[in-house]
Amino acid sequence: MSEAKTIAIIGAGPVGLAAAAHVLERGMSPIVLEAGPEAGHAIRQWQHVQLFSPWEYNVDKAAARLLAPTGWNSPDPQAYPTGGELLEGYLMPLVTRTPLREVIRTSSQVSAVSRVGFDKAKTKGREQAPFEIRYQNGKGPEVLRADAVIDTSGTWFSPNPAGSNGLPAIGEAECASRVAIGMPDVRGINRSRYAGKKVAVLGAGHSAVGTLIDLARLAEEVPETQPVWLLRGADPAKAFGGGRNDKLAARGELGSAFAALVTSGKIRVETEFGVTHLSESEGRLEVSAGSGCAARSVVVDELIVSTGFRPDFSFLSELRLRLDPVIEAPVALAPLIDPNEHSCGTVRPHGARELSHDEPGFYLAGMKSYGRAPTFLMMTGYEQVRSIAADIAGDKKAAARVELVLPETGVCTRGGVETTSAAGCCGGPAKQEASACCAADETAKKAGASGCGCA
Image (tube, rainbow, N blue to C red; front, top):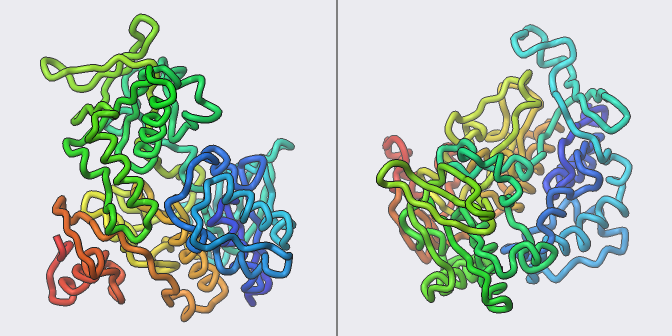
């Protein structure tokens, strides 16, 4: 029965292409809709960035099986690729040398997903109705029907604004010419924009940290360059990561290098800086925080907003999604990844069970499945789509099976309390309990405790 199934996959990034490989391997028919002109369109925006996970964690197993007969040379599993190398060494061979080349439709922007003959409110017979996916491809509106939909469209093109309340700062739109989003290539193609300038970076995640390190290196080459770190929180050390305890060595080294630059004064730090206003100031940009007597500001030439991303659900409004109201992730996944509670690197691998909704046959996967949580790893997405493909094919046993062990950070926070453990963050991942974020939490829940047991 699975052979007749057509599976629509939204997004041709690494996780979307992995989904297509697993669907194909299950004897079903994938159709991949990619909004950009080429597969991996979002990655092309950060080709200069080195991943902090080595090749062994960035190649999906089903995709590798597709590539094997093509003469593809598998990269050194211990080497750390850049975004550009990920494209050249893996994604482009996958989309040009394997059967996936026949199922990818580029420049195809999905505008809506629903069920044939059913709006969101109509129930009887809903599960039997195929999905209807509408998209634009430059030739006018197109319609695709599918038995299931996997949304791996990501979040890269839905960045969070500068404003600390989740809204754009007042004046942000008017000052857009001096504001960049994400991780611009400050030492490469964007060098002329930032060299010799005073540049503020807003954010505390890996994007902000990486950009500030690059700006500090640029300052060594062009001494007039002045990096300024605008931090919403009070403690810069929270951005330094697990250091030597991090089993992803490059991630630990990134945090250690950043800590050294901050400690040495090469990066100016403004803590508790919740941006409220942006305005022009004598040909420069004034970035303001607070109000009244507590207001303060810095004047810079450029601002880079690295405050993370959020999912776009606008084209899914006719589907019955079950989303956590805080994290905007599927309700069963949200407790495992809630950054208000923890930053563990040992989020338990999860799949179809945690990613399904009240709309049978529809799944969120990849970065988008994490909602507003910033802790997604590519290998997690590969495990997600392996499980989802099995679930759609009716192999419930394989869908429920865990086939991934995640590397640990060695340092995590629970309810704001930092802990370190050589045996694994918070005791390691949970083994059975779906709502438990880690082993200590699972133990507490089995004992009848409510909430998070390892705080």
